[in-house]
Image (cartoon, rainbow, N blue to C red):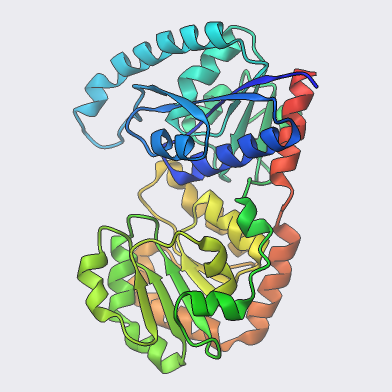
Length: 362
């Protein structure tokens, strides 16, 4: 079997890094002789996560353009130029058979240079509203792998392949029993659980509302797994009780999905895909502080299909108690939601993306 060489780039957030790792692991699983090089952004999470997973990575000085006034925007053109020049040397020296971009500003320079130099490229758009980087790269990409239908407003219809988003293998192949998952979090296996996650660092507004309405969870007779985030753990850990488990960061998400009956969460692309695959009824609270408001668009896809509930952050104080109570007390709604999620889910996304990568090589 030929030893193909791949460059994979994408980062800044877990929503870009973890799909990239899923793709890399599938390539390696299909052909252990494959040579994979990651390209990321210096100082971002991929510079640690990728080596921890056994792959090599080269960092570029590229940084995102800030929407607010920031001195970092003055440096942006210089960092972009340096990253483009460095990308030229990386591509010429490495000579990849294919270059894959999984989104975020980290993937911009290396994928763009690869396209200019004539190398086959595939980009993967996780969100229902395409990011700026992918919209630019999509014009020259051979294939654009998307997670949602109706993406023709961003990319050429002929290039689009609807694959879904790669999801971590331990979540797809999850044979953990609900009993064991609840015991893992040191909770009563005979009582229902509501999970709350707001990102690895935490979400200020979500944490404030959850803190204010802890009595509602008690009134509903449920237990709570509350990932408050590393930034807020010291503030909220004092509120932990027998039925309220407060955690700075959940490392075993496969256990969380098996433990909870519903999930209250942000609506990043990876989370949406995991919710679909695990058929977890959810109340989605999109972050308003992301590019192109893409979390809102992600959440609306499920909401319009009646596969989730949705509360915009600006309405959280006013609507949270009512939505949570009505949602929890309506068993038939949640059961129907699980059926909708099963129809939407795409558990073979990684395999489909890798198949299309091989297609552009051949």
